[in-house]
Structures are given as C-alpha cells and as structure tokens.
Length: 262
Image (cartoon, rainbow, N blue to C red; front, top):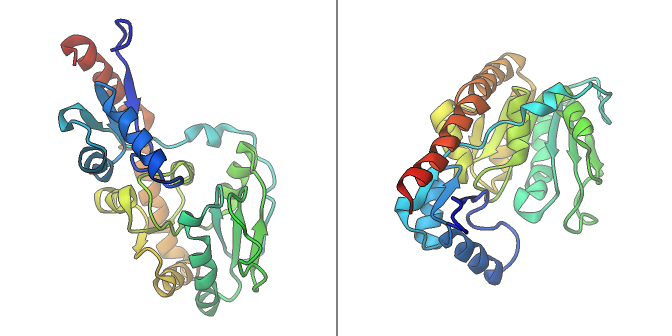
C-alpha cells in the first residue's frame, strides 16, 4: 500500500516485448513492489511468478477486455477498400509482430485467394525499407492510425492477422474482437489460451510462413468459415471479454486488498 491507499498493478506485458535485460529487470521489480498484480492470461501469471519473482499469492488473472468504444465512433471511409477480400495487420510495426512472416506467406495466400489484398497499417518502430511490400495485392500504410481510422480499417477487414512471434495479450486483438472479426493468430502467450478457451481464431505456429499462408488463404477464400469465426469472436466479446464481467472481477481484486490487506 502507498500512504494507506490500496494500489493494484496491471501487467499488460509481464515480459516486455521490446527493450533489453535492464528493462525486463525494471518491469519485474515494479511488479514485485505491488500487493496485487493483475495479468491477462495464465501465461502471464506463469511469467510473473517464474520469470519476475512475483509471489503467486499476489497475482490475479483477468482477461483483456475488448475495445468496444471503437464501435461507437462515427463511421468513415477506410484508407484501403479493394473489391476482393481484405486481410489486415494493423498497429505499431515492430519486429516481434511478424510482419515479415506475413509478407513471406503472402504468395501462398494469393495462390488460394488470387483477388485478396493485404493491408499492413501502422507507425513503423523498425526499418521497413527492406520488407517485400511491392508484391501483388500488398498495401503498406506506414503511419499512425487514429482511432477512427483503425475502426474504419477493422469494419472493412474480412480477416485480421496477428502473426506475432511472442506476446501476452494485444490491444490490436482487443480492437478486432470488438468488431467480431475472424482471426488468424500465432500460438503464443495469451493468444493460444484465448483460442483454446473461447474458440477464437485459427492458430498457426509462430514464424511458420507456410502454415500462415495456407491458413490465411483458405479463410479468405471461404466466407462461410469466416462467418463461423466471426460468430465466435462476437460471442467472446459479448461474454468473457466484455467489460461487464471484467469490471466486476477487477473491482473484486481492489475490494479484496482493501478488506484483507497484503
């Protein structure tokens, strides 16, 4: 507690995806300093306990809620609106997010869905000049997207692809789920748990361009299967990942700390 106030720390990335050993040590020390730590997955719990040295009795797992506020923004035209199916990979462009894997997979996607388009949109946090973004059907929008633009992109998207090399949970995923979008996800961190618990998305091994291309191409060519995945995303967003349930669970952590102390 700090000056008699109950303080709870939410660890969005228990093991940082950017930065070196010094940052990881700093994040671990921060997490150890709080009487309660909320994380978003069982993977995150294990990382906090086993890699950061947090007392397991202090850790609570509460899912990352969907970003429903994006649905309430006034609709606007998306920056890309091709006639065929559209796969999108939005958000900050960082090495761990696997944009290079998606681009390596794209020729296989086009074999299965020849009229498909891939939109990679977000502010680059890495050198993108060497990425093969000049292939057929590939659009790179290397700039920050406002919330309204992100919402427009997600409304238009037929499939959201998150081929991350590592992650606990993702704000981009929370945004895509808010729109009930079908997903292809790497089987890493909280992504795999979400699929196995709620049936959300299709999983591919991280870094496997062949498996990624086959999964994305098959889904872009099959509207019926995409509709099934969209229904699962919408059900998760309305149920376990909706804020009604998450708010109750979060409040309970604070009440527990106020009642029982450390």
